[in-house]
Length: 446
View (cartoon, rainbow, N blue to C red):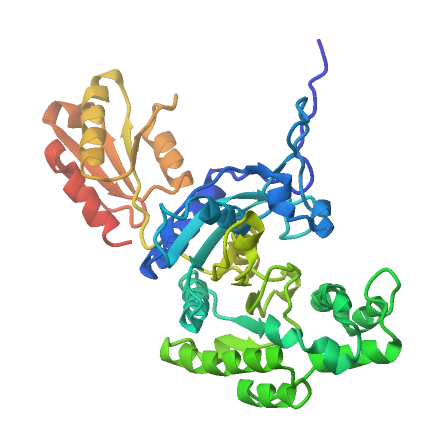
Protein backbone atom coordinates (compact mmCIF):
# COMPACT_ATOMS: atom_id res chain seq x y z
CA UNK A 1 0.00 0.00 0.00
CA UNK A 2 1.40 3.40 -1.00
CA UNK A 3 2.38 5.69 1.84
CA UNK A 4 -0.11 8.48 2.37
CA UNK A 5 1.33 11.83 1.27
CA UNK A 6 1.65 14.37 4.06
CA UNK A 7 0.03 17.70 3.18
CA UNK A 8 0.58 21.07 4.77
CA UNK A 9 -0.14 24.75 4.22
CA UNK A 10 2.56 27.05 2.89
CA UNK A 11 3.97 29.47 5.45
CA UNK A 12 1.89 32.61 5.93
CA UNK A 13 -1.39 31.06 4.79
CA UNK A 14 -4.27 29.89 6.96
CA UNK A 15 -7.39 27.74 6.85
CA UNK A 16 -10.49 29.01 8.63
CA UNK A 17 -12.60 26.15 9.96
CA UNK A 18 -16.34 26.77 10.41
CA UNK A 19 -16.36 28.16 13.97
CA UNK A 20 -13.52 30.59 13.31
CA UNK A 21 -14.90 31.53 9.90
CA UNK A 22 -18.28 32.20 11.50
CA UNK A 23 -16.62 34.64 13.92
CA UNK A 24 -14.79 36.29 11.05
CA UNK A 25 -18.00 36.59 9.03
CA UNK A 26 -19.77 38.20 11.99
CA UNK A 27 -16.89 40.66 12.34
CA UNK A 28 -17.04 41.49 8.62
CA UNK A 29 -20.79 42.02 8.85
CA UNK A 30 -20.28 44.45 11.75
CA UNK A 31 -17.62 46.38 9.81
CA UNK A 32 -19.83 46.47 6.73
CA UNK A 33 -22.76 47.86 8.76
CA UNK A 34 -20.54 50.65 10.05
CA UNK A 35 -19.22 51.46 6.58
CA UNK A 36 -22.75 51.66 5.21
CA UNK A 37 -23.79 53.71 8.24
CA UNK A 38 -21.28 56.32 7.03
CA UNK A 39 -22.67 56.23 3.46
CA UNK A 40 -20.11 54.00 1.71
CA UNK A 41 -21.20 51.78 -1.22
CA UNK A 42 -19.72 48.41 -2.36
CA UNK A 43 -17.17 47.76 -5.12
CA UNK A 44 -15.29 44.64 -6.25
CA UNK A 45 -12.18 44.21 -8.46
CA UNK A 46 -10.09 41.22 -9.68
CA UNK A 47 -7.33 39.76 -7.54
CA UNK A 48 -4.94 39.97 -10.51
CA UNK A 49 -3.56 43.23 -11.91
CA UNK A 50 -0.80 44.21 -14.29
CA UNK A 51 2.45 44.39 -12.35
CA UNK A 52 3.11 47.94 -13.54
CA UNK A 53 -0.28 48.98 -12.18
CA UNK A 54 0.59 47.66 -8.73
CA UNK A 55 4.15 48.92 -8.44
CA UNK A 56 3.86 52.24 -10.25
CA UNK A 57 7.46 51.60 -11.26
CA UNK A 58 8.64 51.67 -7.64
CA UNK A 59 11.23 48.88 -7.12
CA UNK A 60 10.55 48.83 -3.38
CA UNK A 61 7.26 47.02 -3.98
CA UNK A 62 8.73 44.16 -6.01
CA UNK A 63 9.86 42.37 -2.87
CA UNK A 64 6.26 42.15 -1.64
CA UNK A 65 4.46 41.10 -4.79
CA UNK A 66 3.50 37.58 -5.85
CA UNK A 67 4.08 37.49 -9.60
CA UNK A 68 2.08 35.14 -11.80
CA UNK A 69 4.19 32.79 -13.89
CA UNK A 70 2.66 31.90 -17.25
CA UNK A 71 3.69 30.76 -20.71
CA UNK A 72 2.59 33.98 -22.42
CA UNK A 73 5.18 36.64 -21.58
CA UNK A 74 3.39 39.43 -23.45
CA UNK A 75 2.07 40.84 -20.17
CA UNK A 76 3.40 40.79 -16.63
CA UNK A 77 0.73 40.00 -14.05
CA UNK A 78 0.76 39.89 -10.25
CA UNK A 79 -1.58 39.43 -7.31
CA UNK A 80 -2.76 42.69 -5.75
CA UNK A 81 -1.04 43.64 -2.49
CA UNK A 82 -3.80 46.03 -1.37
CA UNK A 83 -7.19 47.34 -2.51
CA UNK A 84 -6.24 51.01 -2.89
CA UNK A 85 -4.26 50.76 -6.13
CA UNK A 86 -7.07 48.77 -7.85
CA UNK A 87 -9.51 51.47 -6.71
CA UNK A 88 -7.36 54.13 -8.37
CA UNK A 89 -7.32 52.08 -11.57
CA UNK A 90 -11.14 51.75 -11.50
CA UNK A 91 -11.62 55.48 -10.96
CA UNK A 92 -9.31 56.28 -13.87
CA UNK A 93 -11.07 53.79 -16.19
CA UNK A 94 -14.70 54.70 -15.40
CA UNK A 95 -14.83 58.47 -14.81
CA UNK A 96 -18.23 58.81 -16.49
CA UNK A 97 -19.85 55.89 -14.65
CA UNK A 98 -18.89 57.09 -11.16
CA UNK A 99 -20.47 60.01 -9.29
CA UNK A 100 -18.01 62.06 -7.24
CA UNK A 101 -17.32 62.30 -4.39
CA UNK A 102 -17.26 58.49 -4.55
CA UNK A 103 -17.48 56.75 -1.18
CA UNK A 104 -16.73 53.07 -1.70
CA UNK A 105 -15.99 50.09 0.49
CA UNK A 106 -14.47 46.81 -0.64
CA UNK A 107 -13.49 43.54 0.96
CA UNK A 108 -11.06 41.16 -0.73
CA UNK A 109 -8.00 38.99 -0.36
CA UNK A 110 -4.58 40.52 -0.95
CA UNK A 111 -1.15 38.88 -1.13
CA UNK A 112 2.27 40.00 0.07
CA UNK A 113 5.48 38.03 -0.22
CA UNK A 114 6.89 39.17 3.10
CA UNK A 115 8.08 37.01 5.98
CA UNK A 116 5.19 35.46 7.88
CA UNK A 117 4.94 36.03 11.65
CA UNK A 118 2.34 36.12 14.42
CA UNK A 119 -0.72 38.02 13.22
CA UNK A 120 0.90 38.73 9.83
CA UNK A 121 0.00 36.53 6.90
CA UNK A 122 1.04 36.45 3.26
CA UNK A 123 -2.57 36.03 2.15
CA UNK A 124 -5.08 38.05 4.09
CA UNK A 125 -8.34 39.95 3.85
CA UNK A 126 -8.57 43.70 3.75
CA UNK A 127 -11.68 45.78 4.21
CA UNK A 128 -11.29 49.30 2.79
CA UNK A 129 -13.30 52.49 2.89
CA UNK A 130 -12.25 55.39 0.66
CA UNK A 131 -13.57 58.79 -0.35
CA UNK A 132 -12.47 59.72 -3.88
CA UNK A 133 -13.06 63.18 -5.32
CA UNK A 134 -13.12 65.29 -2.14
CA UNK A 135 -10.25 67.44 -0.94
CA UNK A 136 -12.21 68.61 2.09
CA UNK A 137 -10.67 68.05 5.53
CA UNK A 138 -14.10 66.81 6.54
CA UNK A 139 -13.45 63.70 4.43
CA UNK A 140 -10.26 63.01 6.40
CA UNK A 141 -12.13 63.57 9.67
CA UNK A 142 -14.90 61.22 8.52
CA UNK A 143 -12.33 58.47 7.95
CA UNK A 144 -10.96 58.92 11.48
CA UNK A 145 -14.49 58.94 12.92
CA UNK A 146 -15.24 55.75 10.99
CA UNK A 147 -12.09 54.07 12.31
CA UNK A 148 -13.10 54.97 15.86
CA UNK A 149 -16.65 53.71 15.31
CA UNK A 150 -15.48 50.36 13.92
CA UNK A 151 -13.02 49.73 16.76
CA UNK A 152 -15.63 50.46 19.41
CA UNK A 153 -18.29 48.33 17.70
CA UNK A 154 -15.90 45.37 17.60
CA UNK A 155 -15.45 45.58 21.36
CA UNK A 156 -11.98 47.12 21.60
CA UNK A 157 -11.46 49.47 24.54
CA UNK A 158 -7.72 50.16 24.45
CA UNK A 159 -6.74 51.47 21.04
CA UNK A 160 -5.17 54.63 19.65
CA UNK A 161 -5.50 56.16 16.18
CA UNK A 162 -2.14 57.77 15.43
CA UNK A 163 -2.30 60.66 12.94
CA UNK A 164 0.37 62.56 11.02
CA UNK A 165 0.52 64.79 7.95
CA UNK A 166 3.04 64.09 5.19
CA UNK A 167 3.15 67.79 4.24
CA UNK A 168 4.93 68.47 7.52
CA UNK A 169 7.45 65.75 6.77
CA UNK A 170 8.24 67.52 3.49
CA UNK A 171 9.94 70.20 5.56
CA UNK A 172 12.21 67.71 7.30
CA UNK A 173 15.17 68.05 4.85
CA UNK A 174 15.23 71.81 5.46
CA UNK A 175 15.21 71.35 9.24
CA UNK A 176 17.82 68.59 9.37
CA UNK A 177 19.99 69.70 6.46
CA UNK A 178 19.90 66.74 4.06
CA UNK A 179 18.87 66.73 0.38
CA UNK A 180 15.20 66.22 -0.52
CA UNK A 181 16.20 63.18 -2.60
CA UNK A 182 16.89 61.32 0.64
CA UNK A 183 13.49 61.98 2.20
CA UNK A 184 11.77 58.76 1.08
CA UNK A 185 14.67 56.65 2.41
CA UNK A 186 14.56 58.55 5.71
CA UNK A 187 10.80 58.05 6.07
CA UNK A 188 11.01 54.33 5.22
CA UNK A 189 13.52 53.97 8.03
CA UNK A 190 11.46 56.00 10.52
CA UNK A 191 8.46 53.83 9.63
CA UNK A 192 10.35 50.96 11.32
CA UNK A 193 10.55 52.89 14.60
CA UNK A 194 8.21 50.53 16.50
CA UNK A 195 10.06 47.47 15.18
CA UNK A 196 13.74 48.39 15.58
CA UNK A 197 13.63 51.18 18.19
CA UNK A 198 15.50 54.48 18.38
CA UNK A 199 18.97 52.95 18.22
CA UNK A 200 17.99 50.83 15.24
CA UNK A 201 16.65 53.90 13.42
CA UNK A 202 19.84 55.86 14.18
CA UNK A 203 22.01 53.05 12.87
CA UNK A 204 20.00 52.53 9.69
CA UNK A 205 19.77 56.24 8.89
CA UNK A 206 23.58 56.36 8.89
CA UNK A 207 23.90 53.25 6.73
CA UNK A 208 25.17 53.59 3.18
CA UNK A 209 22.39 51.22 2.10
CA UNK A 210 19.71 53.62 3.35
CA UNK A 211 19.68 57.42 3.72
CA UNK A 212 23.42 57.70 4.46
CA UNK A 213 23.00 60.63 6.84
CA UNK A 214 25.73 61.88 9.11
CA UNK A 215 25.43 60.92 12.79
CA UNK A 216 24.44 64.49 13.63
CA UNK A 217 21.75 64.51 10.92
CA UNK A 218 20.43 61.14 12.05
CA UNK A 219 20.22 62.42 15.64
CA UNK A 220 18.27 65.52 14.53
CA UNK A 221 15.81 63.27 12.66
CA UNK A 222 15.28 61.12 15.77
CA UNK A 223 14.92 64.19 17.99
CA UNK A 224 12.16 65.58 15.75
CA UNK A 225 10.19 62.34 15.59
CA UNK A 226 10.57 61.90 19.33
CA UNK A 227 8.90 65.22 20.28
CA UNK A 228 6.63 64.75 23.30
CA UNK A 229 3.83 67.00 24.57
CA UNK A 230 0.90 66.85 26.98
CA UNK A 231 -1.71 67.41 24.26
CA UNK A 232 -2.08 67.67 20.49
CA UNK A 233 -2.10 71.47 20.26
CA UNK A 234 1.09 71.71 22.32
CA UNK A 235 2.72 69.10 20.08
CA UNK A 236 1.90 71.22 17.01
CA UNK A 237 3.38 74.31 18.62
CA UNK A 238 6.63 72.47 19.44
CA UNK A 239 6.97 71.10 15.90
CA UNK A 240 6.10 74.45 14.29
CA UNK A 241 8.98 76.04 16.15
CA UNK A 242 11.37 73.66 14.35
CA UNK A 243 10.00 73.38 10.80
CA UNK A 244 8.82 76.52 9.04
CA UNK A 245 8.51 75.70 5.31
CA UNK A 246 5.34 76.57 3.39
CA UNK A 247 4.37 72.91 2.90
CA UNK A 248 4.92 72.15 6.57
CA UNK A 249 2.83 75.17 7.60
CA UNK A 250 -0.03 73.91 5.38
CA UNK A 251 0.20 70.56 7.15
CA UNK A 252 0.18 72.17 10.59
CA UNK A 253 -2.90 74.21 9.65
CA UNK A 254 -4.71 71.05 8.49
CA UNK A 255 -3.82 69.24 11.72
CA UNK A 256 -5.12 72.15 13.77
CA UNK A 257 -8.39 72.17 11.84
CA UNK A 258 -8.72 68.39 12.22
CA UNK A 259 -8.79 68.76 16.00
CA UNK A 260 -12.03 70.75 15.76
CA UNK A 261 -13.59 68.41 13.17
CA UNK A 262 -12.95 65.33 15.33
CA UNK A 263 -14.42 67.03 18.38
CA UNK A 264 -17.61 67.85 16.44
CA UNK A 265 -17.83 64.27 15.11
CA UNK A 266 -17.63 62.89 18.64
CA UNK A 267 -14.23 61.18 18.43
CA UNK A 268 -12.90 61.06 22.03
CA UNK A 269 -9.58 62.81 22.67
CA UNK A 270 -8.12 59.69 24.28
CA UNK A 271 -8.73 57.56 21.16
CA UNK A 272 -6.48 59.52 18.79
CA UNK A 273 -3.21 61.44 18.88
CA UNK A 274 -0.80 63.23 16.55
CA UNK A 275 2.41 61.24 16.15
CA UNK A 276 5.13 62.53 13.82
CA UNK A 277 6.76 59.07 13.72
CA UNK A 278 3.66 57.70 11.96
CA UNK A 279 4.92 58.08 8.40
CA UNK A 280 3.60 55.02 6.53
CA UNK A 281 5.98 53.39 4.07
CA UNK A 282 3.98 53.96 0.89
CA UNK A 283 5.19 56.89 -1.18
CA UNK A 284 1.78 57.88 -2.57
CA UNK A 285 0.44 59.48 0.62
CA UNK A 286 0.22 63.25 0.23
CA UNK A 287 -1.48 64.51 3.39
CA UNK A 288 -2.85 62.85 6.49
CA UNK A 289 -1.79 59.32 7.41
CA UNK A 290 -3.55 57.15 10.00
CA UNK A 291 -2.58 54.05 11.96
CA UNK A 292 -4.62 52.29 14.63
CA UNK A 293 -2.67 50.37 17.24
CA UNK A 294 -3.92 48.23 20.09
CA UNK A 295 -2.23 49.47 23.25
CA UNK A 296 -2.53 46.00 24.79
CA UNK A 297 -0.94 44.33 21.74
CA UNK A 298 1.29 46.91 20.00
CA UNK A 299 3.69 44.29 18.64
CA UNK A 300 1.32 43.25 15.85
CA UNK A 301 1.36 46.73 14.38
CA UNK A 302 -1.53 48.67 12.89
CA UNK A 303 -4.90 46.93 12.53
CA UNK A 304 -6.63 49.79 10.67
CA UNK A 305 -4.57 52.26 8.64
CA UNK A 306 -4.59 54.58 5.65
CA UNK A 307 -4.29 58.21 4.63
CA UNK A 308 -4.75 60.79 1.90
CA UNK A 309 -3.36 60.01 -1.57
CA UNK A 310 -4.32 62.87 -3.88
CA UNK A 311 -1.84 62.01 -6.66
CA UNK A 312 -2.35 58.28 -7.09
CA UNK A 313 -4.86 58.43 -9.94
CA UNK A 314 -2.39 60.49 -11.98
CA UNK A 315 -0.26 57.35 -12.36
CA UNK A 316 -3.02 55.92 -14.56
CA UNK A 317 -3.27 58.82 -16.97
CA UNK A 318 -6.06 60.64 -15.16
CA UNK A 319 -6.10 64.13 -13.74
CA UNK A 320 -5.43 64.99 -10.14
CA UNK A 321 -8.24 63.49 -8.06
CA UNK A 322 -8.13 63.86 -4.27
CA UNK A 323 -8.73 60.73 -2.21
CA UNK A 324 -8.53 59.55 1.39
CA UNK A 325 -9.25 56.20 2.98
CA UNK A 326 -8.33 53.47 5.41
CA UNK A 327 -8.04 49.69 5.41
CA UNK A 328 -8.87 47.11 8.07
CA UNK A 329 -6.37 44.29 8.38
CA UNK A 330 -9.11 41.71 8.86
CA UNK A 331 -7.01 38.66 9.75
CA UNK A 332 -4.74 40.69 12.01
CA UNK A 333 -7.82 42.18 13.70
CA UNK A 334 -9.31 38.71 14.23
CA UNK A 335 -5.99 37.47 15.62
CA UNK A 336 -5.96 40.40 18.05
CA UNK A 337 -9.54 39.74 19.15
CA UNK A 338 -8.68 36.14 19.97
CA UNK A 339 -5.37 37.03 21.63
CA UNK A 340 -6.92 39.76 23.80
CA UNK A 341 -10.15 37.80 24.33
CA UNK A 342 -12.17 40.76 23.11
CA UNK A 343 -15.85 40.03 23.51
CA UNK A 344 -17.64 40.60 20.26
CA UNK A 345 -21.09 39.43 19.29
CA UNK A 346 -23.09 40.15 16.18
CA UNK A 347 -26.07 40.42 18.52
CA UNK A 348 -27.87 37.12 18.21
CA UNK A 349 -27.23 33.52 17.38
CA UNK A 350 -29.98 33.10 14.81
CA UNK A 351 -29.55 29.44 13.90
CA UNK A 352 -31.81 26.45 14.54
CA UNK A 353 -31.52 22.73 13.79
CA UNK A 354 -34.32 20.23 13.15
CA UNK A 355 -33.67 16.80 14.69
CA UNK A 356 -35.52 13.64 13.64
CA UNK A 357 -35.12 10.02 14.72
CA UNK A 358 -36.78 7.65 12.24
CA UNK A 359 -38.09 7.50 8.68
CA UNK A 360 -41.63 8.13 9.86
CA UNK A 361 -40.72 11.58 11.21
CA UNK A 362 -38.69 12.72 8.22
CA UNK A 363 -41.53 14.34 6.24
CA UNK A 364 -42.64 16.34 9.29
CA UNK A 365 -39.02 17.40 9.92
CA UNK A 366 -38.73 18.59 6.32
CA UNK A 367 -41.89 20.66 6.71
CA UNK A 368 -40.53 22.17 9.94
CA UNK A 369 -37.23 23.24 8.35
CA UNK A 370 -39.20 24.68 5.44
CA UNK A 371 -41.29 26.78 7.84
CA UNK A 372 -38.15 28.06 9.56
CA UNK A 373 -36.45 29.06 6.32
CA UNK A 374 -39.61 30.61 4.94
CA UNK A 375 -39.59 32.89 7.97
CA UNK A 376 -35.95 33.90 7.50
CA UNK A 377 -34.42 31.72 10.23
CA UNK A 378 -31.10 30.09 9.21
CA UNK A 379 -31.72 26.41 9.87
CA UNK A 380 -30.47 22.92 9.14
CA UNK A 381 -32.09 19.51 9.09
CA UNK A 382 -29.92 16.83 10.69
CA UNK A 383 -28.16 14.76 7.97
CA UNK A 384 -25.97 12.48 10.09
CA UNK A 385 -26.19 8.80 11.03
CA UNK A 386 -26.88 9.27 14.75
CA UNK A 387 -30.41 8.09 15.63
CA UNK A 388 -30.57 8.82 19.36
CA UNK A 389 -31.83 12.01 20.98
CA UNK A 390 -28.66 12.28 23.06
CA UNK A 391 -26.42 11.95 20.02
CA UNK A 392 -28.25 14.50 17.90
CA UNK A 393 -28.48 16.99 20.77
CA UNK A 394 -24.72 16.65 21.25
CA UNK A 395 -24.31 17.57 17.57
CA UNK A 396 -26.56 20.62 18.02
CA UNK A 397 -24.70 21.88 21.09
CA UNK A 398 -21.26 21.30 19.58
CA UNK A 399 -22.24 23.33 16.51
CA UNK A 400 -23.56 26.21 18.62
CA UNK A 401 -27.22 26.18 17.54
CA UNK A 402 -29.53 28.37 19.59
CA UNK A 403 -32.60 26.19 19.24
CA UNK A 404 -33.44 22.62 18.35
CA UNK A 405 -36.72 21.43 16.82
CA UNK A 406 -37.32 17.80 17.86
CA UNK A 407 -39.64 15.63 15.80
CA UNK A 408 -40.03 11.98 16.67
CA UNK A 409 -42.73 9.44 15.92
CA UNK A 410 -45.12 10.91 18.49
CA UNK A 411 -44.73 14.51 17.26
CA UNK A 412 -45.05 13.45 13.61
CA UNK A 413 -48.33 11.64 14.34
CA UNK A 414 -49.72 14.60 16.30
CA UNK A 415 -48.58 17.26 13.81
CA UNK A 416 -46.44 18.95 16.47
CA UNK A 417 -42.79 19.67 17.25
CA UNK A 418 -40.85 20.03 20.50
CA UNK A 419 -38.88 23.26 20.64
CA UNK A 420 -35.80 23.18 22.89
CA UNK A 421 -33.81 26.25 23.97
CA UNK A 422 -30.21 24.98 23.87
CA UNK A 423 -29.06 27.54 26.43
CA UNK A 424 -31.67 27.11 29.16
CA UNK A 425 -32.74 23.61 28.00
CA UNK A 426 -36.37 24.61 28.53
CA UNK A 427 -38.70 23.11 25.97
CA UNK A 428 -42.26 23.37 24.76
CA UNK A 429 -44.45 21.50 22.27
CA UNK A 430 -46.23 23.43 19.51
CA UNK A 431 -48.09 22.77 16.28
CA UNK A 432 -45.86 22.47 13.19
CA UNK A 433 -47.27 25.70 11.77
CA UNK A 434 -46.10 27.56 14.91
CA UNK A 435 -42.52 26.27 14.82
CA UNK A 436 -41.07 29.50 13.37
CA UNK A 437 -42.79 31.83 15.85
CA UNK A 438 -41.70 29.67 18.80
CA UNK A 439 -38.07 29.56 17.61
CA UNK A 440 -38.09 33.33 17.08
CA UNK A 441 -39.04 33.80 20.76
CA UNK A 442 -35.88 31.88 21.73
CA UNK A 443 -33.70 33.80 19.30
CA UNK A 444 -35.14 37.08 20.49
CA UNK A 445 -33.65 36.46 23.90
CA UNK A 446 -30.09 36.15 22.59
